[in-house]
Image (cartoon, rainbow, N blue to C red; front, side, top):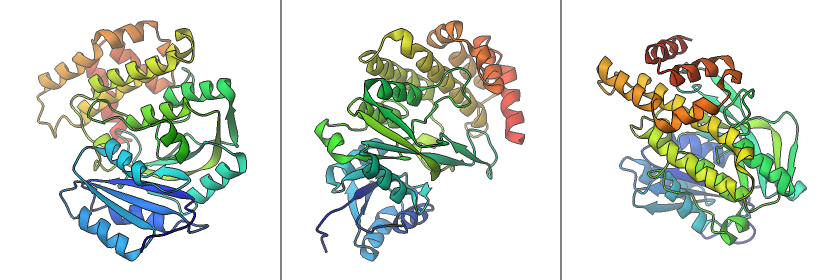
Length: 357
């Protein structure tokens, strides 16, 4: 039965090859606290497993769930398809192999209404850590210790910088995080300005580009306390698995971010932030090569060649020559040194030690 009346928010879930995780994800959305006048849109991105049938079954069980079956085009375009059919006043996104706390959307929506904010940001819990952390590690990332407001051009410019990157002394490579899934967005802003996700096949971190494009069109945002989104490292999604062209795609992304920021501020204002982002992406690319070397059946010589190709890239070396990498947190500074001076043997040792915890 088609629902009528007000829908407060639409939760869009791109679905592809995640049958082991899908039910837990949808269950976490269905069990949201607070008012029940929301909808969940499951976008089957041409999944080859049991996910299409699972999506249809969930829609039969709960009238608030709608399903869209699409040909495979990647998670970014799947989210775009969900945006096209969303009826909520606000929109949120969840990856199908992650899940959310039961109070997440109630907290985000309440803040959006109370502060008339076009964007509300929460924190996230990274379960399984980062690239090489132990499976049971949980990191609380990009959390606000108090309600934090960003208003007017100056406030939004600051938020754009600190979503894109961070200052050298900050613990994380992005102060406020570039995940789009931990936030809530106003639907009319997205549609009025035709804000959409780019293809993940053209550049990595399509989340970041979407968030920046959205921020460019608003004048008020708020960050709230608490980490409600559970980002689970399980290798199921494209963004969390091996990509041979990761670094090359990251360079393209940083170029796009620079072009976005240069429309709002001088280069000397944003360069420190995007330089940190590029060297952070290079570090992640090196770490994934080491982590997946056995799976990819790389010889020692082949692995070293891949690492050296990243470390000696002209673009990365330009950044590391001007970036104050010695001011980074200790482990990041050490890894930056290994890239600056092509110390690939030390890189492999660092990743091995990190894996052992």
